[in-house]
Length: 632
Ligand code: SPV
Ligand code: MN
Image (cartoon, rainbow, N blue to C red; front, top):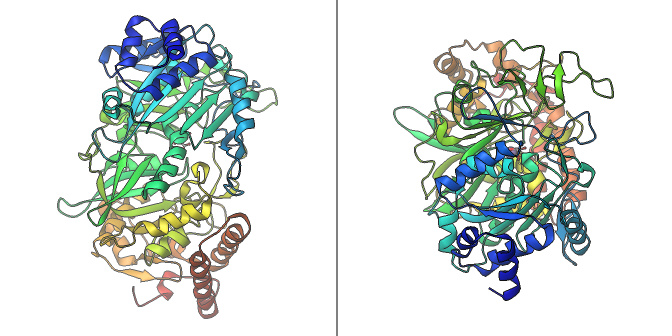
């Protein structure tokens, strides 16, 4: 270590913390901490090892600083992000201010948000300068993926928020010991976060909220924000770094759940599933009777002729709206019983957390993201303030759930039998369909995914947006290349996963949802059977769909509900005009906004359009599944 670095560290670290840091014999790490101290000027530095005492210290600190408040049930705390009716709205990912630092001569294409590297670094360092004055800063080490796995990546986060440090403890595997194994390797992710100026423990300089990502140096900077999606470095911030690594090394880093679907006998088939935020990803991973490996981030590698996946995380930062005893019994049970849980942006009355769609009667008063709240309270624009925020969340360890899959920590990952893509699509896709083959799935399902915007990000809701692989917000490569990587991924694999599309948000012409909350329990069972070729399907121009006879059996067996021919026809009618318009939109985006899109993408979309137009000539614009007789 050079003398300057040593002096800086010794100036702010107690002997004990200094010892903990230098036990990791890694000059790049030492320099990162020293640079952060020089820039942000914290009063002191706490280095967190994997020891129970260190981890407990951060958990306690989050309450002492006031960033979290204790609730009535043991282990439960609440955290609030910036209030909506104040200027400091900080209740979602800030896409507009999340940018890649672009070195000279690099072009990431129009769909990615970038800023010139020198300019961006100067700006964000300006925001971070002195931002930790008077505070203690935390240094935490994590292992992204199971420990001892060749899939996993090490990361270090520096943050002045104990809430962020505590959340990460629930969400990631502790990685101090793993870091020791790195020796002096430079291969790890670095994240530097400061909440910036705070009042009542919320970030107030949100006009200067910036999240800048340096892809070359694998560093993320985040400032003037507390919302988890902007600050918890190993969630989406590192996903962007991982996508670059995956590109270099020939694997995939995805916005995907991983789950075990339990088939006939004791068969378990693993699925990875990509859904944009707020579109049913967590609730799919938590389907009653199945087992969860992860709900948000997956690293996918090729291994022995198959695709294998690991969960990057070991906890859930989940949307709490509509979590209730009937629809989500497992999660309900965990978050309403004693245990280490952080609630965010919910309503608290007498120490009890409430949220929208929890199935309980709500009190008229309490504390929520707007401060003291009462029924009918309005914001400065006269808009009624809901009891809890739409993007209110819970943070919990997976090991505290009763449905954790037994392979969740397997260093080899789980073999993936199927990949599911789903978006919030009111008018085009059927509830479930299977791609003809990998390329057809990558192009017409994954790369063509669209979804209506939600409360997970700041800005208007309900706007249909292009969301390839549900990963657009995090793609850090030119999009054409990212899609090409998917195409190439399974070449030469003996057992490539089967690609499926689902749609939980289909509506009729009156704007009413036409599938039930629990129908997804049936769709996953159908997909499981299809992976093994146990049921037939009907071939339509867009994909292979279930036979009525199979669903008629599965619905009562899985969710105890009857499934009528009328429901089947309504849900599985192929909507040709909508399907063709979708192809038009997708082609236009790839043609005009994506550099070097793979030609095969246009070819496969054109073939699909042709098939749809043929079918329209024969059967008209809306085609009952029964008209596609013959089976697939
Ligand atoms: C999402 O919005 O996709 C989430 C939460 O999973 S976060 O990434 O933390 O914003
Ligand atoms: Mn997510």
